[in-house]
Length: 380
Image: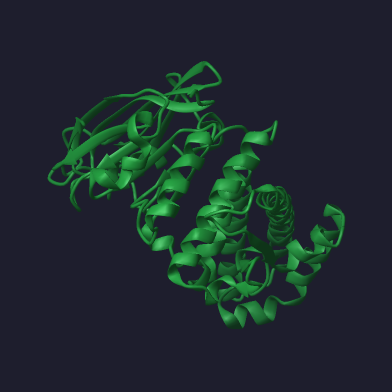
């Protein structure tokens, strides 16, 4: 089969335990197998460095440089040749020292400097790791981060709104902590928070609506359907049909009214940075956090597969890469085979890792198999 989005070539230099890697690929799913610590997840992480943010492990720029390299002879670099709807794009990311002794991130698209949003538009991606298997019963911040990645894959400007909101919020809190109650200064920051906060909430609500439609349209099968909802002050306003200007104005007024409370708390207690994503197992009418570990992972996979379909059907988005670390964990053979069939039907290429090649036997020759050993990769 053909895919609308795939990686045709991936190269790494001094990334984690990979001194050098050069993989030539076709559009079939990519299965990476080998013992723990061999470098499988590092390859997935390298791909996510081409997306906005800090990648699959939320690592700093210096954390991912190869052990022993000490960032001197050659900073790390990742490059990918991406094929999307027959068009080729080359993406690159890396880090280098600044003259002042710091470190800065580099991003390239077809050899030219690129913004994070431009990279996101060229290679949308979603990833799952074993740490996310119990996402529904974990911390709200993890669910919020997960859902913001889903939103970013659909709306590339979402990351810019989130970054601007965080900057304004930190500066407002600094002033409040120092008891600097300058109304003009604080008011300006609160207007920034309200404008960007409303944009964040609106993008989340639209993403949720599209995602829930895609979930509802899925046939019943190995991956149960989830009923999703957003719990958040601004999101609730948009869901009730409020206009963006009204949401912004009311949020700015609220922030002005609670300055004393936030000063005492040491943080802003209201806003999209406090929102949560909730889920229910539709067939069982049960909160997701009360389901078994296997059911929680199956729900998460169902949401992720529906997200891929929602993006593919969205004229403003397109196909997305799916990266699943330890894809077989908590999945029996039936669900594993069902997952592979869905990945084959997805218009974006899948990348999966596992400890043994036999875990991917249901793919047969419909996938590419690579063995990873001590930072080296061999075609199987």
